[in-house]
Image 1: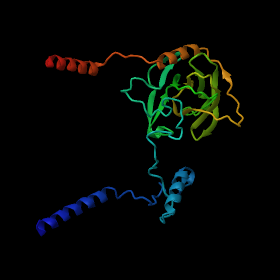
Image 2: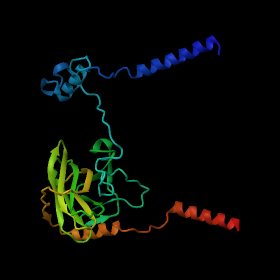
Image 3: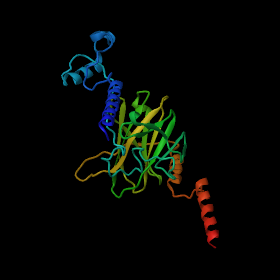
Image 4: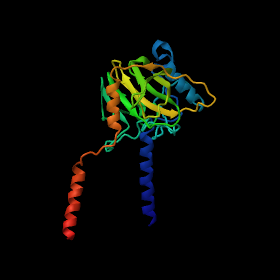
Length: 285
């Protein structure tokens, strides 16, 4: 390559890099951005919590002054809550739902009805952990299927964010598929708009399921549901109180039916593939 071509190539690369820098020149990491109206631009004449947060973050970098947050960055594990490695729920974090799955670990419905229909999904910024979570409409409900445990006691928890802001709009119940008692999973803590539900359930030795109902007038987001065996050796624990839902018999029957293995009729793709195999077999003869 001669010298003129080298200079031409360097000139093109320099122009390209200049354009790239110019396109993003209005946003710089660590630079303080003045709030609207100066220091008194926020309502009430104060800089506001967002401006104070941005100011604190930028002053550490040496820029100083008040500013507003343009965007926040957070890290998400695409596998959800991996710390609960012994979770008995089939998919407590809703991360493995797929439109191609023949069976899934959650049912949905309303009233005394549950069907093998995965709950609606909410994504990423609406979730507490991972990249997927469940969105339950007003009056809707979901049921998570779990494996049984040989230990005597189970610890049950999940997080919910009702858009009404009232934690009691969400009801949690644990039962088994064999007619055992129903145990409440009650609110134990609240973190920002999220409500944590917890309970301790004596295990009947049968497969449990976690029933969550949204009885509020607005949508509720549910995430990070966990059922794990509880190590009770040398520890004191109090079982969750029993509750009675009149429609639980129908809900239990629906969950049991959905959790049983079943054969589904072949879809169009499978039928086309089988026809192709038959044609190949006839051709070989």
